[in-house]
Length: 345
Ligand code: NAI
Image 1 (cartoon, helix red, strand yellow):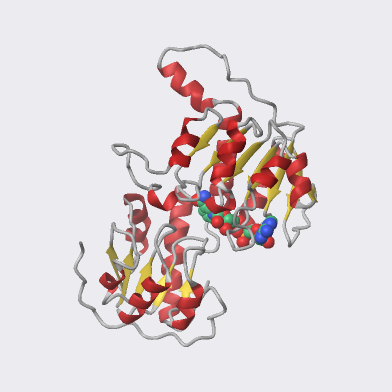
Image 2 (image 1 turned 120 degrees about the vertical axis):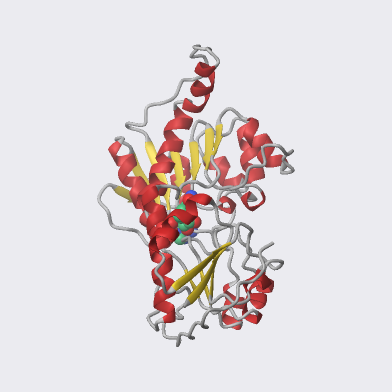
C-alpha cells in the first residue's frame, strides 16, 4: 500500500485523483498547505503531493525527511517553490508533471488577451447594470500586429499557434530556439520594443526573476499589452503598477502574481487585502487578473492526476520518472505497509 498526502486540496483536485486511484494507493486529502508548520503531519505518508503555493523550503523538507516521507511528487510543472538543494541533502527525490496540457494555459493566455484588448470584462459588468454605452471600450485588431513570445517551450509554442491563427506576426526569444516556421527569434530587448502583445512563457529562475522591470517595461510600446500566465515573479509588480499608472503601457493581464501565495486559490472576499500593489492593480481598468487558473481545464486536471499517480507508482516500483535533478538512477525505497493516519488539523 502506498500512502500519499495531497496538500492544499480543492474540490476540483479530488475528482480525478478519486477516479484514477488504484486499490494499492491510499490518498489522504489535506485542505491545508504544506509548509514548515504542517510538514510533521506527513508522518506515516510515503509520498507528499504539494501544489504551487506550498512551501518546500529547507525547513519543510527536513521535517518531511524526519517524518519518513520518501518522495515529493509535485502535481504541477513549475518547481520554483522547492529547495532542490535541501531535497538532495535530505535524500528526498522530487518529481513533477512536466507537461499536462500546454493548450490549457495557452488558451487561457489567449482568453486574457481577447478579454483585455476588447474590454469584455468591463462590457460584461456594464450590460448587467443596463449600461449599454460603448465609451472606453475600443480595442485594436490583432491581425497584422506583432506578438512577442518569451519562452517557446510547450506552452509558448501552443500560444504561438493561436496567435498565428489570429494573423499576428510572431517574434520570440528563448536560449533554445524551436526552429518553427513563422517564428523570428530576436533578443528580449528587440522583442519588447517591437511587440504589440508580449506573452511570458518561460520558467521562473534566478536568471528570469524580474525580467520585466522598470528598464524593460520602458522599452515596450505605450499601447502594448503584457500577458503573464507563467510565474508572477517574472514581473516586478511594483514597476508594472508604476508603468501602468504613468500610461507607459497599454494594459496587463496576469494569471500569476509575485505574491500570489498569500491570497490566490482562496476566497478572501470578506477581508481587506494587505497587498497594496495587488489592491492598486485591481483598481486599474486596463488590468485583468485571474487567480492562477491557466491549468484549470478538465483535460489538464485528468492529466495531472494520471501523471502524478504514475510518477508515484513508478518510483515505488523501481521505475522512477519525471524526477527533477537527475535522480532517475537512484534506488527507490519501499513504501511502508498500512501506516497509521496522522491527525488532521
Ligand atoms: P517548457 O519547459 O516546455 O518551456 C519553457 C521555455 O522557456 C524553454 O523553451 C526554455 O528554453 C525557455 N526559457 C528559459 N529561460 C528563458 C529566458 N531567460 N528567456 C526566454 N526563454 C527562456 O515549459 P512550459 O511547459 O512551456 O511551461 C512554461 C511555464 O508556464 C512554466 O515554467 C510554469 O511556470 C508556467 N505554467 C503556468 C501554469 C498556469 O496555470 N498559469 C500552468 C503550467 C505552467
